[in-house]
Length: 332
Image (cartoon, rainbow, N blue to C red):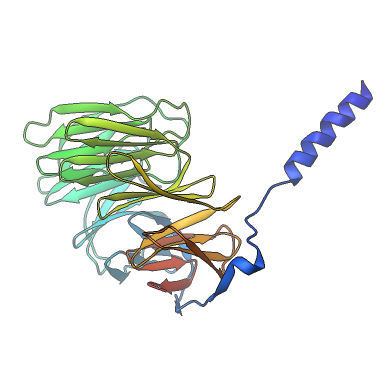
């Protein structure tokens, strides 16, 4: 019995110690990429909409803003000239201008986790997986909905999406809810995935009235009334130029059309990929210190060394990656 126990323990420890890392051959590395610039502070938190530095500065897709956000606040979104932040001590959502001045604030029963605003209409998803639609002009609730409890969620949380006279709420339980803004009636509830944990919507985008939706394990599109889906282990996702780009946990870069036909794929064994830049080429970073450039037509790759550390916060725009306190501009 003791011998069997020793064998089991050995196998367990051996399995834990054999984590594999991306190690391209020296011949496949074509050069080294240097950083273009540095930030004055490190990224302390980030999402798809922006990144907050440790000194309170906000980096968004349209610029850098010195809003001096305090420590107990979290950045949620930026829509036009308005910045949405949440206070996790008071469950307050505040609307700031780009100088960091608070214009309005609203307190909810639970912490706002994601939010978007269009004109005077604020849409928020709260920590208990409930939705709220708020008229910020008259400080009045227009709609609310309670949903099933989500016990564990992925840190990549999508924001509500306004489309014409609708708003799409991303839930933490693998669903999206489409609300009519004219009468505040639910038009449709779409179940994307039924996983018990980490099943929140991590990505939500639109092309006209067509939807692109993802959880961490499923990609789905709704095109002209028809739905298409793929089971994938998604690390990151980007929709641009009518194509969907996936970074998978298996180290793949996959290109789909809106009907989820696979157009191209490149695989990098054991790679931990993050950030997607689509310009003259496709660019992504690998956590062991590599930048991968992929030709968008042939999907032939080129690998470069780059001095990055594993597990640092990052944020990217259409042509810039902010990695911790360093800046990489594209194309390269």
